[in-house]
Amino acid sequence: MQNECCGSRERKRRETRRRIVDKAMELVEAKGFENVTVEDICEAADISRRTFFNYMDSKDEAVLGSFPFELTDTALEAIATTPSDNVLDLVFSNIEVVPDVLSRELLLRRRAILRQHPQLAGAAYERKSETLTRLGRAVEKHLTLFPEDRKLADAPVSLEVNAIVNFFYVSVAMYLSNPDFPAHGGPGIEPLRTAAQLHTDLAKELKW
Image (tube, rainbow, N blue to C red; front, top):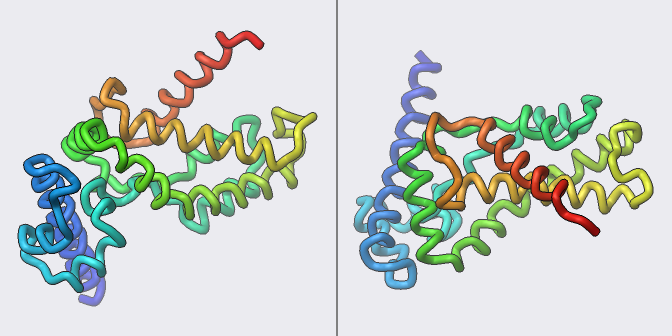
């Protein structure tokens, strides 16, 4: 009974969060980001301002939705302590996807809004910064434990950590934000691998 109660409560929370995001998107699609207030979103979603901030940190989070990839403490520990000759793929293999945040419909709408309001990209990055910082610590621990996994042996560890974290971020950004990136299929980590491969292919063509 307790599990059913917890499951029902969590389902209601997801439904409320989805309703907030959906109504926020609708308003921005109709009026533009600058012309929509938190109060407008609360009225459309039939919630109080207090409830809004129980679910969202800001208006931009309501419009873009939560970060759809989770790096739990268990995942970060696995990244830090599992040997791998491809640390970025190790990261991809350990992230958890939040399916209802990454539906195809929301993904396409999100891309359209970012195209019309590019200033939101900076706000989206700020909301990811804590996740990226935690990931950086895990990658640094990994490269310290397994120096044989390093690819830039002549560079300081901090530079390789920064490169891997940035590689992760640009792969995520391409998947979530680029209107020309494929959006078919269900949510998952394979599109992240595809985005990373595109960047790898480009890097191989660059001559210095």
